[in-house]
Image (cartoon, rainbow over the protein chains, first blue to last red):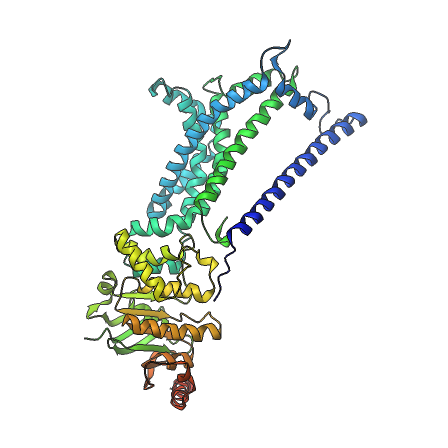
Length: 297
Length: 257
């Protein structure tokens, strides 16, 4: 009877090679997308095609000019800080809101999922309302949250605290749904085993149902991580917060016809923030979820 | 006092009668196999003993207590056909699971897990994950887990049914060694006639529709059983007895009422 475990160093070598392969693929796809953008641009400009829209330096700037804009000065005339410095600062501010909102939403979403999964009656009664909460456009909810919450918040939390709540509102829903689904995913035999040990409900929850639900929960957290960034950016608009990416987007949207690269550059930074959030959750999942290969989502 | 006492147990699932009028007593130290074709209710009977399902009528007791109380007092350990290991736990942590549920303290738990690992001969695999083990090794972890809290009764539901013949025979030998070492009583559900005869002190033959006990065969092979037990003439005679009892049960079912 021999174990099929692979020894450590070989396993690491395989992991390194797989990592390098993925990085290469990422770069290759990036290059292909760049080629597609520039190719489309030059073809449309050359042929003068106007469908679906006229391609100009304003509607589709060169990718390299977007990068140039990032490293150039924010204001014309070569004065003041570089655009990337301003945008990274704004992104860090938005990241604070999104992270707080994500943490709040994830904890509340998980807790709600546990309660609803444990009590069928509550699940039947409340789940439709939970779903309904997400059909209300966030642009409607955001100003209300700011109006209700901001006056009640201590100075240290004012403004960004409301935005965090808006981000949490977008975060909790996928977590709740997946937690309910995951808690019911435990194997029937595994549950019988717990019954044979005369384990109480709470023990079954912590020793079986929650670990069995983790792959589901992490799948939801990955969705929520990027949603919380979007929620934070949208939340900044009605609260007229100028320090975050939302403020920068409004600003550069106004100047789009004069300086289109500014809005595109802001987009790039916002996307980078969302991707970072996603990667952090991915890393956390790798550290926390230790399941058989076939059970990892 | 019998370890298992079943009196006039009947179990119906909707319109089908899975078990009818079952009476069975199992004494301390016995190794009893339940054998019969699919649908004869042998697994159902095992699950009634474990209080995983309730009989429609009749009573079942373990160590003189109603089965529900016996389950709450953790009088039995159970092994399924699938090992049902928690794949997020290591081998050692899987064996410790019932001890954690029973709130043993950490030091006592570690000592017991070490003892069980030695009993099932998995030293060196404590920190492996279940999916890194072969099917036979996984089932040994499952047996160690079932015995970790020293239950007086071991319930086994076709534990070696998914293993190949070679591994199965080796696991049979190991199970007998463990049974002798732990001095427990075993109720063992199986499809295999040879396995039932080789392992048991008594073979309970069941027949289907409705599930009932059609014969009980005392196995008088010498203890301890060894690799050569399977080659003794008496072994073949007993295998034939069980086979005939199974066919008789089958014919009973076919015969017009």
